[in-house]
Structures are given as C-alpha cells and as structure tokens.
Amino acid sequence: MSIETDNMVCLWAEPWGTDHWMHPGEELTVVTETAPEQSPFTMVVHDQGVTVWVR
Image (cartoon, rainbow, N blue to C red; front, top):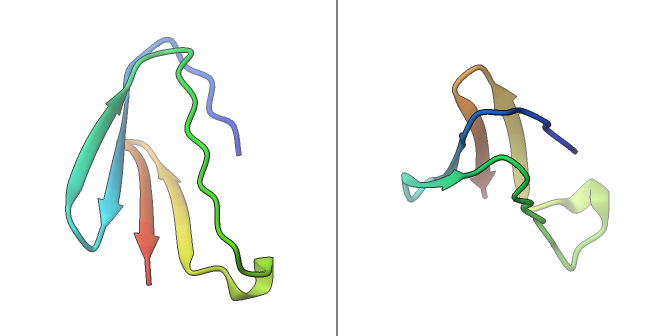
C-alpha cells in the first residue's frame, strides 16, 4: 500500500495506542511471517492517517 502526500501522516499502532509521525517521502513496511490469509494485523487508511491493528 502506498500513500503519497506532501503532508505529514500519523501512523497509529493499536491496541497500544502509540502514534508515529511520518514525513513526506518516508516509508513504512509492515511484515509478517504468516500467509496473507492468516495476517495478524489489519491496516486502515483514513483521513487522519493510517491505523495498524495488531491482533
């Protein structure tokens, strides 16, 4: 998934409630060792940033 913007983007890691601010041009890679259909996380892009929910 790629998000291109000239603004900073907030990444929330849930359920911990931590936030991480990313500057334009920075990249984030979420990696898992399970098969895609067994993914232990959900990623949601919304108007306030990106939320990664870890199960």
